[in-house]
Image (tube, rainbow, N blue to C red; front, side):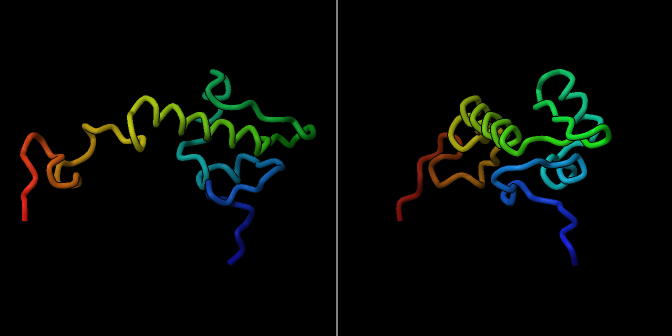
Length: 105
């Protein structure tokens, strides 16, 4: 089956332009209304008008935005970008869940 020009975040081309239909839902996990609301508020890069009826985003701008989101996520949430309080204790290595000492075998 054809890819129809849709990409996942790891498959973005190095350079070029992506249209909204290529961004949502494959790359961006939100609706087109949220996308345009974020553009208007300055929280997402502004698109480029390629012609009267064609608007697209520069891949370089998208990569920068994604990198900045990852950087702020990691720095605000600690190592790995996952807040410690959101990790279930059973997922932690022995000795990390609460204050119980690790078992010695």
